[in-house]
Length: 85
Image (cartoon, rainbow, N blue to C red; front, side, top):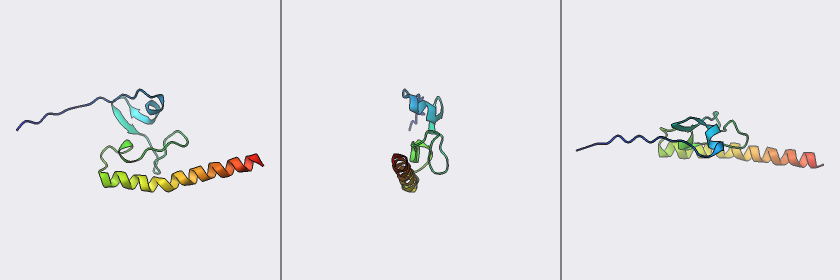
């Protein structure tokens, strides 16, 4: 039985992804405990921020970050309405 070790080099062609990932060849976003990146309003969860996460962990990360995204959006909406007064 033969096994092949296939290594794939990842390099983002998108400017936003180049800012969010750890560096060339390492396509994992840098996030805080809530999944938020250094860019306001941009989250990365699951395998985008944890390369070794299994399916259950990746899915759980999404459900954990969902409420944080909702709070962020609501805060922006409230701030916009306050400024509009």
